[in-house]
Length: 452
Ligand code: ADP
Ligand code: MG
Image (cartoon, rainbow, N blue to C red):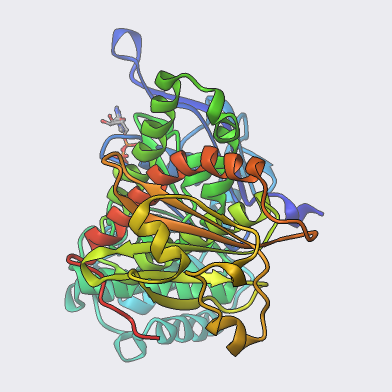
């Protein structure tokens, strides 16, 4: 089916400005897909080629090397008529001053409909009024741009882009001229209306306060899609693909025991750098985003360990020494709601591992002096085996504890399980530390205790 094809498919695109010795490459082997209905943010430093890429996708600039397909139409080599027809199916929003000052809000929006000769003028006016109503400007139809605030003008621009119900909106720095509050309001409105219409958005921005509206984030650096972007770019909703990508690279992870120290260090640095890049990108005015990110990161790691070691349950506890507790936000699970657990550092199996840094592989917990059977009694669960392991930072401080419960199949956890777990623990430590620092940065000071 044609609708399974991305609405924009960019393949191996190079782009150059200038000629002769001044010729400068600004896009380097860029490949990107925008799927129907998704909201993709393209970010990256000034001069990295974002606008160039956007204008290529919008048929506003000719494709010279590589392929750009928009709504099924190849743009490389396409004639003028084909380019114009592609543009008609795209709504454009630019940073500012892109309304015509001599026209009212309603007339600016009608400009966009005016391209359709089959639409009676009266019908066009009705559609424009409805669209302006949808962006909250029903009372401003006859205002001129100079009578509107910056935020209101961008709402007119949104109405103009969406009134023809395009399959694609391309937006270049739409919040650049707006203050924080109105910038956010404008993109949230854009997001809502686009989702209602099933319209895909490619939005170029520097504005890291709006990244959370995206289904997916990509980054350009020096004309290239930045290394972590292909997989790690995924935003909150898709964070598992971060881990998918780490897993790929991290076939390394599985072989980590056989890596030389140097190679291993490189791996850790790479992962940590990627997380740092990610944190910098979301540079956090947005607490909820970070929380969600963090939870999903832990969740993904936990699931991975559980499956790897064929355990029924896995929990990662974070050690809060200053509070004398271990905390887990995600103890699962069988697809059920994550639990929040707070347990004392001074008692129990996990507490002991956190205090002593020793691994506990317990074949019969009911015989173990540190095992607390209360939870089993309250929930009807039967703990048969426990494998509990410390995760330390570089200074050998145990900052997390992983606890696996009940090996599937009946026999207890083996020495081989411990070893696999240990191989995985080191790279995991780097990732967890990055995750924690990411969370701490968003929420300075120790985590508040959440009594459960
Ligand atoms: P961004 O939108 O990420 O800031 P651009 O795509 O506008 O980046 O620009 C990428 C690079 O191409 C920059 O170095 C910029 O100076 C250069 N550039 C952009 N437009 C032109 C142009 N019309 N002629 C020559 N160089 C250009
Ligand atoms: Mg630009």
